[in-house]
Amino acid sequence: MSEAGSARASAAASSGRERSAAGWLFRSIGRWPCCRLQALVLVLLLAGAALAQDEAEPSGRGLILGERAGLWQLYRKGGVVMHAILAASIAALAFGIERSIALRASVQIPLGLAGDIAARVSRGGVAAGVAALKGETSALGRMLAAALERAGDGRAGMEEAAAASSDLVLHELRRNVRPLGIVASLAPLLGLLGTVFGMIKAFDRASAGGLGRGEELAAGIAEALITTGAGLIVAIPALLAYHVLRGRAEDLVRRAEAETATVIDRALASVARPEPHDAARQSPRRDAPQAARTGQEGEAAADARASASGGQERGGTGARA
View 1 (cartoon, rainbow, N blue to C red):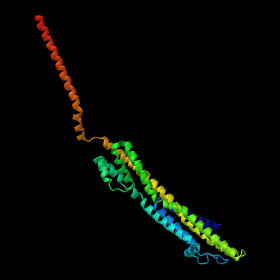
View 2 (cartoon, rainbow, N blue to C red):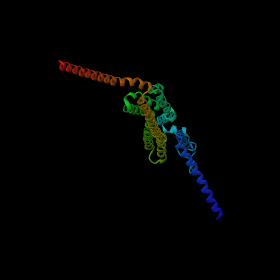
View 3 (cartoon, rainbow, N blue to C red):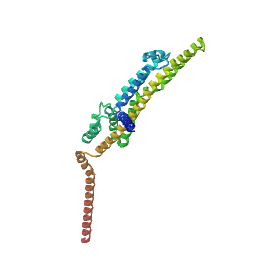
View 4 (cartoon, rainbow, N blue to C red):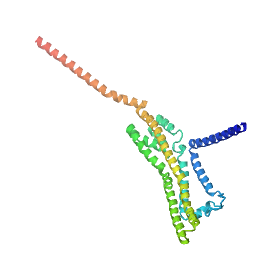
């Protein structure tokens, strides 16, 4: 009983370590976006290793895979369609790597850019912020530049410019993600096409040699299914990369919009607050009309007093007469 208990305890501990290791792996993949591409490459390598491993069948070797069938042998047996599937896989890998590098937060939302532009706007006005953003190619920089250039139109104009710029930026970030979706849709169809061609050849050979030879028909069907498997191996990682990179582009644009809104508030506060020398120049202009009106009222009162005194003098002269 003690030996059985210790065996169960060791087995439980081993399974616990395996679960913890697997949990750590999945948490790492979710935490670091760059690990997702490595996970895709790992899936491709494991799939290739699974296809290339030796088949240990006690009843003998198969007619198609054989005892030492590798990737090159499977590729040759797949036929012409395998060339198209290989080209699609290379294209998916190239676009996936390019977008994984371009869609990094450090590239599209540089650290401290929004704070630096807000400080420049507070010190030197909107013109200083626009000058600092010249030549900026990141998503955040382009959205900030579009918003600050419309500072004269108020909040509505700046927000409209930022929204239009965010739509354009999102379209450009997604532009090289679309080929991954195309490969994910096209690769299974290419595999199915190769399977159809292989089935046609298999049944044609079987009809020529007689239906009694079932091993030849089975070999032809197995050879035809190679392209279907290859198409699925290419399509599944491409589809996963397509959705991951598309979601990453949307997240980057949302973060850029939030930081742009903060800079817009700072810019509007800077525009609404007049400079001291501007206020000094404007105060005499505001006081001038009031002074003119006061002078005119004073002159009218003096004229009225003069007229009243002249009337009294004329009245006194008439009375003496």
